[in-house]
Structure formats: structure tokens, C-alpha cells
Length: 567
Image 1 (spheres, rainbow, N blue to C red):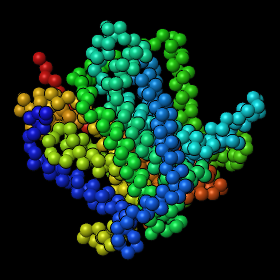
Image 2: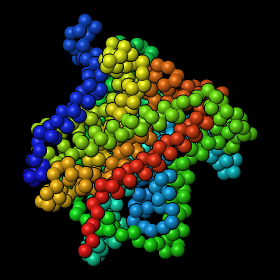
Image 3: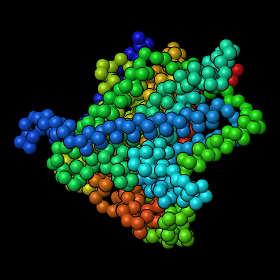
Image 4: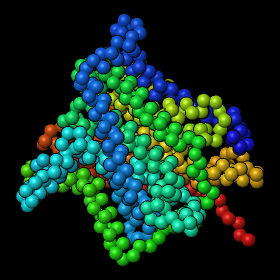
């Protein structure tokens, strides 16, 4: 039963819900509706299910579906094996460099995954650095980058930060009294983690794991770069770009991807339904960090160092490639040069600024919408409030290129208000596409954060005279600040590597972000050096944007944080 604070001011919440729904309808439902319309009608406009029958009759498409499912499941498992221990060790134990380790742990998201695939092929491929050394000194090689398993390897290293960020924040919000009670009852080590710590952090883990699964399920760039086309996203892309915009099977594949991804997200939400993970204590009441012995510290540093070396190997490869003159069939480049950076600064001016502008606006819009939807879902009694979550989450399953085509069709004759400038010829749709595609990331983080804010804290504020707006400002937002920050950072850095929608929506080079420039460079072997240089600059630019976002959110949280009165 919802408390009185959840039932107050229903008109204000209803207005916010309508505004959010209007945005989602205009920029997600209507464009995607054109995709569904094409999948379910014949050329004469009559309804049909024949296109789905044609899909089932093609062995390649059925194989693509099961391959995508296998890759998404295994990438989620591998990402969990990397992220869960890393999050637990850095939150649970006290040692130098824990914050830096967590910061380095999110760097894989900054790099476009298809660029990471190129770098990993140079390091772990059949003729990569690792296998060349293994073959020379030990007489064997490891087929890490072969076929679907290579995609799983690349995707796991790229997307595990989704789990790391959300799980780290959930672990920090656990009430330390719960851990102390378990210790007093004899729970230690693995039993303490598995029976107490991990169950209490499930909202954060499932929020991250669901993002990994769905993102891998519809990834396009990595399979194409690695030459694997028997997966759903590459098949949708090839159908739309090669067969034609009117080919119904491309839209059928997109509809199947949307439906299956929504099902996966619904199942993850179903796991959380009816369970309470909220705690009353914050700040000093979180789980206490424990010191490690000398040998435990050495072991932890060795293990964490190996993990970070593995997950940062794409960045190392791209950095070397950005300075390399020639790097082929050799453990390291033959020689080094700064010519690639000179070429980038000469040919790609403005792309860094465009990236920061588009991604900053998109991420800011995402956390506003995500916080509003989370509050409406968990703190209101509005009817059909769950639909906001479902509609927003559906963006995860929409391939970027299909969403972009929907935008081009929906807004092709629409001008910016009070001007004669077509909206499709500006960068506004690029920013909006980034926001729509990344909204589920911010939403999952905001929902996980609000689930851990107990309703009694808001009731206490209301009992001393605070209205809903003041309660949200002084109580809810400060306690959600960690989740809001995680959502902003996730949206920001993943938008910076968005490629599929960008390809369709960029109409002139002056509006192009860095991901588009990297893609153009990577189309040829001679352009991989400048492409890698631009990738390094993208990492630096997004890292600066991430740091600035941390500072802004921290200052905002401190301004809203209640000030204790002196006795």
C-alpha cells in the first residue's frame, strides 16, 4: 500500500507524467511505429503476417537469432565474472588506489566497441601480439578472437562497466548493520557475500546485467568489424542498407529484437517484484571497509592488476596504433609517428566539441527523464505508471539505424518552430536520438537508487512541513545522487560511441561527432592510424566530460544536502 506522501499532489505528478509520455511518444513510439507498420503490412497496405513466415523459412535468419541469444547470454556471464569481484573488492576492502581502479574500470565504455575490436585483433588475434609470442616461445596459440567467441570476448570487455557502476553504488548503499548482524551470527567470507551482501545489492546488479544483455543483443558494429554477419543486428543492417528501405524482412528482424529485449527487461523487473531492498541508514551506516593483510594486499593488487590489464588492452592497442607507422605480423609496431594526430587535427576540427555538446545535453535530458519516471513508478499511484518504464526501456531494443530511419521518415517535412529550417538537416535529431537510445541506462540507475531510499525518510520530511518539491530537493535527490551520477555517466560515455544512428542522421561534416569520424577512418587500413588517434582523443574528451559531471553532481548534492543545526 502506498503511503500518504505517494498520494499527495496527484495533479503535479500527472502533468509530469504527461510531459514524459509526450516526449516518448514523439521521439520513440511514432518512429518505431513506422517500423512495425512496415513489418505487418503488404506493399498495398493490407495487414499480413507473411513477412514473419518468410523469416522462419530462412535458415540464416533463424541461426542469426540463436547466435545473438548465445552471445548476449555468454557476454553477460563473462561481464559478471569481471565486474562483481572488482566491485566487491574495491568497496568491501580498504587499500590505496580503489577509487582510481573504479575509474579505470569504466574506461572501456568510452571507446567505440568496433574500435576496441580492431585493437583486440591486433593484440589477441591469430596474428596478434599475444599469439605471436605464445607461438614463438611456447609453441601454441589461443583462438580468443575467433567467430562468436571473439565477439563475446570483445563485448564482455566493453560492457562490463554497466554492472560495475551499478553494483558499486548498490554495495555502498547497503546498511552496515545488516553485515554486522550476519557476522555476529557466524557468517563469514563467501557465505557472507552470497547470503547477505550480494542479495542486498541485487537491484544494482540486475540493473547492470540487463543493460549488458540487451546492448549486446542488438550490437551492430562489433560483429561487422569482425566479419560475423549471422546475427540479428547485422542481418537487419544488411537488409535495410543493401536490399533496400522497403524490404520487410529488415523490419521484421527489428520487431523481433524489440519484442525479445522487452521480454528480457520484463523478466529482470519480475525478479525484483515484491522484494524490499531499501535501508534506513546512509553515509556512516554503510558497510565498513576492512583492511587487508600484507599478503592479502599483494594478492589483491596482482589479481586486480591482471584484470585491469585485460580490460584496458583495447585502449593500449588503440594508443599504440595511433602512433604506429606499420603494425602487422609483429608483437609491436615497427616504428612510431605523430603524423596521425596531425592529420586528425587538420581534418577533424569540431568533432570533439560536437561530441561533448550532443552527449552532455542527451545525458542531462536522460537523468531528468529517468528520475521523473522512477519517482512516478515507485512513489505515485497513477494508473498505468508502469507503462512509462516499459516504453522508455523499449529504446534498448531498437537498433540505432532503424530509429534513425524512423526519424528521417517522421520528421522529413518538419521544420524547427518559427523557422524554415528542416529539423533533419540539423544536429538536434542526433542529440535526441542519443537521449532516446540511452534513456534506459539512466532510468535503470535511477530506479535502482530510488529503490534503496526508504519511503519513511520522505514521510519524516513531510511530517515536519516539507512539501513534495522540497522533499524531493532536500531528501530524495541527495540520496539518489549516486544513482543519478551513474546514470549520467553511463548515458554520456555510451552516447559518445553511438555509431549506427549517427551514420544516418549526420547530414554535413560540420555536425559530425567523433564516432562518425572514427568510423570513416576505420574503413581502410591506411586510415586506421588516424582513426585510432581520433579514438584516443575521444577517450580523453569523454573522460574530461565524465570528470566534470562528477564535480557538477557532487556540488549539486552538497547544495541540496540538509544542514545539521548546532545544539
